[in-house]
Length: 403
Ligand code: DI6
Ligand code: FE
Image (cartoon, rainbow, N blue to C red; front, side, top):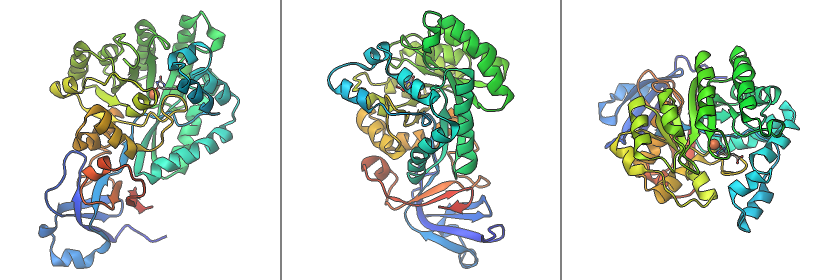
């Protein structure tokens, strides 16, 4: 392997989206070792600097490595049969009530070994990597026993250590009520609070704790107990909230300084205000909105008015968003939710970093940062949102290595 420590590598004449805005002139990006050493207009680069550096690429658009801040990409089985049922008119909630939905994936995930889950997740993760993702959040939530939730989180940690991508893990034991706790949801919440969270914390398997606050998930009071248990172990929280109805899950999440509230189609102004005050990010998931043929759009204007940062993610999962292409979310967010291309790009970079508690570490390009970035074969960053066209990623640089 080439020793990169002393070489200065140059990406030149690029339009740069730094995670917040697009440069109005051609830029140079210099990398030494694994670090961004210089970021400046081409006009400020001396001939000497250009000659001394090894030019890696000229032209195109440079963005931070993309961040998919909400995925469920580890699971067993497939739900293609439910896709067909939904096409015949059966609703997502009805399928869940009949014992399908999340619970059918739980059955298949429990029946899978760690190795099988790893092998099944790998192509999904590789699809994200080939789409420019350098940081991905992966949730548990299809195990719903102590053993199976930890099994999922171990697979997530292994993906992060063996694949060229940062993996952030989230414990989502409060995703659905497992059949063995039928009519005893509070008993299952006890298990989460007294056993699953402590064990995940002891093994350092979870970076955060998530809940599904919904009629077909858990009540606000039950989610609050999970948040209290998470806090006792210094774990940040987040919530699937206001996806199918308005229960006030986002405001609850904000009261616990949640990193993010996700989905939020049914969020009202009080919820938006609570999130703004707490600094909670609004994570938009247009893939689930599209798949479930929702019609209620998240309150984008209110989020703008109260300056709640909007992140954007795939929600990649076998039921409501079988999508493992983050760049497609840029287009969907603009077309379905009327985000601007710049807002959409911020949603998969700087705001996604904030949704993972990684502000200042990922999602923005600045001098001194680790060099995780993408070079795209396009002329302006908005083209990423405009065209649904895989294959435009020219180079992906992860921790200084080009892939
Ligand atoms: N909301 C979602 O979008 C995913 N989980 C959740 O609480 C869907 C999970 C699934 O249908 O398997
Ligand atoms: Fe989700």
